[in-house]
Amino acid sequence: MAKKPKVLLTANYGPNELGWGEDMFDLAASRLVRGHGPFQITSHMHHAGLYLIAENISNPTTVLEHPHWEEFDAELDKGYDVIGFQLKSVQTAKIARMMKRIREKSPESKIVVGGYGVGTLNNPVPGDKNGDAVYIRENADYLCREEGVRFMRKLLGDDPVDREITQNHLPLCGLTLPGLKTTAMRAPMLLVSLGCPNACDFCNTSAFFHHKKIYVAEPEQTYRYIKRYQKRMGFDEMFVLLFDEDFFLNVDYVNELGRLLRSDKKTWGVRYFTFASARSLSNFTAQELRDNGLGAVWIGVESFQLHNPGSSEAIDDQYNKRKGKQGIKELFEDLHNHEIQTTGSLVLGFDFHTPENMKEDIDRFVELKTISYQISPLTPCPGTALYDRMIEEGRIFDTFRWEDINLWKDDVFELKNFKKGQIKEFFDYAHEKMRDDVGPQPLQVMEVALDSYREVKDKTDELHTFQAERIRYMAMAAASYARAIKKHHQSAKVRERAAMLERRVKKEIRPNPVFAAGIDVASRFIASKIKERVEQPPEPIVSDPPPRWTYYHTFDDRVWVKRGRKPGKPQPYKDAGMLGIGTTIIKFALRI
Picture 1 (spheres, rainbow, N blue to C red):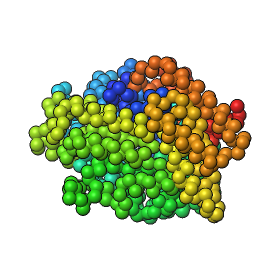
Picture 2 (cartoon, rainbow, N blue to C red):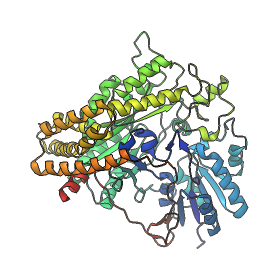
Picture 3 (cartoon, rainbow, N blue to C red):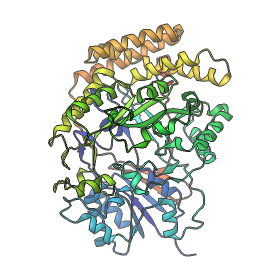
Picture 4 (cartoon, rainbow, N blue to C red):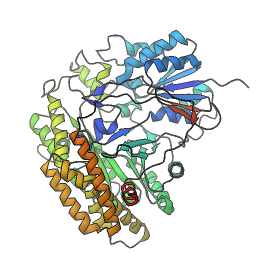
């Protein structure tokens, strides 16, 4: 039997650039919960697509994440037949340099380039003075602009190409809570589908798949992978990230997954986070969403100027995904009242934006009290309808570089009503409002838990009784942050909100004396750690995650891994487990 080609899958080398002072690879600190100082949550994510491909081909495969140049260069000496890159547009210049090195050191290797950055290569930005996009386009042996697993199976002759795409060994993403630096909450991510039919003109991921949805996992498969992760992590109660750009468009899928989650008491505690639109959420009541397993949802608000189309001042709304049965504020409140946390996204710099109505957008957005948020300048990305329109109107600046395709800049195209640098002022204003009006995330966890507990506490069926008890634990765990916020937050409004919510927990949840004592111990510990962070100068921000080598079908049938700038020998991969947000602090407190 012929020897199977040896495969290397990787992305850009580091260190990485910062985005307006934060690590772009830290999804929490740079985007979703940005700007909370000593109460800042941090996160780590993985290049999930590389791991998904590696798991689903039978070739000996190495996934190399976050190498420095020297580590990537040394890896090429190991004789790979196929080298695949995940390209993000912001890293185009780095990937071009890596490809040139492959051609020098390993000219017989076949180069495959995939990822959303491939969709931009035919429309190089004006600042691409070195011709990096053209180099990648002309020197890659294969460009992938389709679902990547089956693409690689076809390329490698790995039959049957259409066999199931499994998701059993993907690495976990995680969050580090403020004051608990050594304690990480880990969560699995599962891919349900790629692409989105909503076709927002600024959206690169929707444009990449030509506004079509490509399913990767059916409900039964997703449920099976969830149960596998429960076993891997040793927890029945967990959060799962389901990647689907508008999950609730497919009513049958949502209902079937919900039925499966309810069919076994061991999966009653599974909650998932996913993406949705106001339009697709209108297919369900908030209680149906909760009972189908939804625990948190990302909704694109984008601008309040796009809503209420009957208003005399309404702006023509091309973004149909925002047209639901409820107003935006009513929708968010309804979700919160049913134990569903929200992430909202707001875009700054549409043509209809003026300094006056953009400030109004920000103020109304803050009032939604989302647990997390993405507030970002409008970016015309090559390959999208927005970029094409900006080119036609002559509004793209000649200085627009690949490195500028990110969420942290406001000087790549001519805005209708703002000067260069002015959007950054509104960006800072928005994050300051989130910090000083809404406050750290535990407060939103407390409020949603308390409000939803009112709705569910008197239900008598077994499922809702289980939900009510889980919500009580969530409220009590989040309350362990109230002392730190009351003592050390800079905003009087937030300190008052913390005190009010703490009183509500004591009155409405009424933890028994043992739990109350545990919460008190945990809250004192957290407050002491937050005090240290307040008094110490902040650590310098760098974007340089440690490298990780993961080996599939290499030593045996197990997944092997080594990590760090000075790694030892590869070891069989073992999960570190998961710490649940509701039980971790309480268990710690009781142990103390």
